Image 1: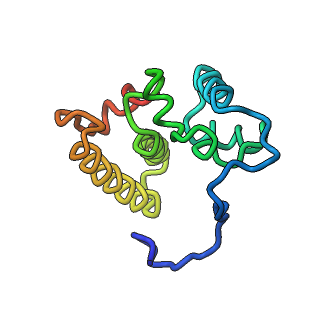
Image 2: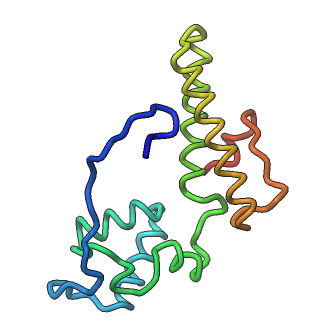
Length: 151
């Protein structure tokens, strides 16, 4: 399937393990992994960074195989999940950076196109999260006040 805006058909990337059982080398129990996730979240890490940290530092390839729950689900149970979903939050941060760049470089048309694409991705993702109930129906993306909403 082609990418949304570039029409490229990239196929490279890492693959998840095929077998969905707990590997024999993992020395952590389910509760210990949950406590690690909570500890890393309190340090200010996002769910994707927590997954990378678990994989690289603690040797846990898939946390949901060990705990039977996703990282975001564990954080939701412990009330540590952010107000905005992580992907929407990072898109808003990207849009803020592009706007700051465009204030200095007004004739950068490639950046202007990138901003248009980023804004449309934000609108599309916000529509999805409103329909699924992850964010409130009244939430609206305002580029001028976006830097206040994003942590």
